Image (cartoon, rainbow, N blue to C red; front, side, top):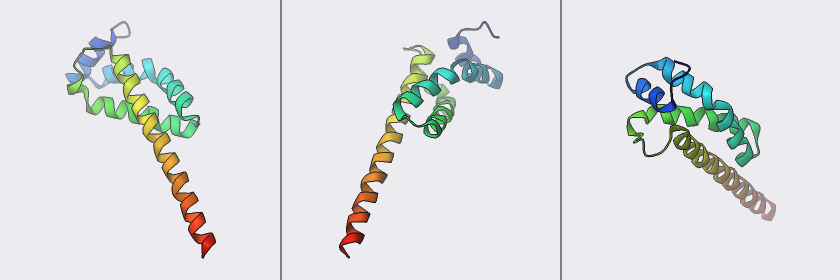
Amino acid sequence: MGGASDRELIDRARRGEAEAFGLLVRRHQRRIYRLAAHLTRNAPEAEDVTQETFVRAYQALDRFDGRSEPFTWLYRIAVNLSLNQIRARKSKLRKGTTDDLASSRS
């Protein structure tokens, strides 16, 4: 199975072969982590994004339409999750600043 293409692994995973999806994860996990680490600039967040990327991909196997390569699909999921993580962090920072200002005025 190690020589199978990503598309073949997706097809096998759709048919319930868990080891096929596991191989896809092992094949791309490092690259997805590096992407997430580059975007988030935070190792723990990058680990979370990497894990969530594969969870989301597994949950959406039936929706993968094959118009792009599987890695491109995983890459897009990881980028979207990384951007969400960055937005959430900025939102927390803004909220913390607003809370700090409000308490200092009291």
